[in-house]
Length: 88
Image 1 (cartoon, rainbow, N blue to C red):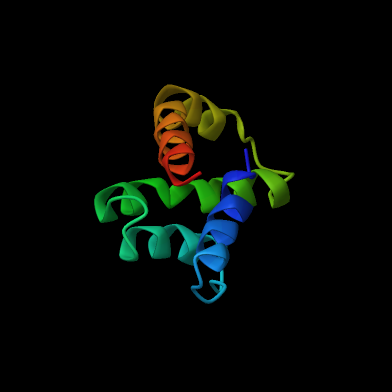
Image 2 (spheres, rainbow, N blue to C red):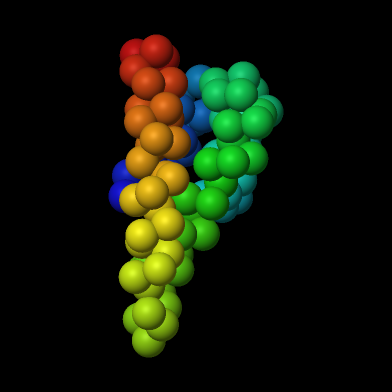
């Protein structure tokens, strides 16, 4: 997890768009520019916050968030990968 965010930046830059200001902006811009649906981008943007939460909130119990991600987020990751594959 986390690789999808630099991939979002890479897609935008390689297609000639400016580098987004943040990871969440990268995901929103993918929707704005039609690489993924806007609906998907607004649903998937949580991935940027989850990455930061897991990387920086060492003292907080992250197990509930990980369980939620495993229950709901894996499908979103698979959908994101399929969208990226179509661009190659």
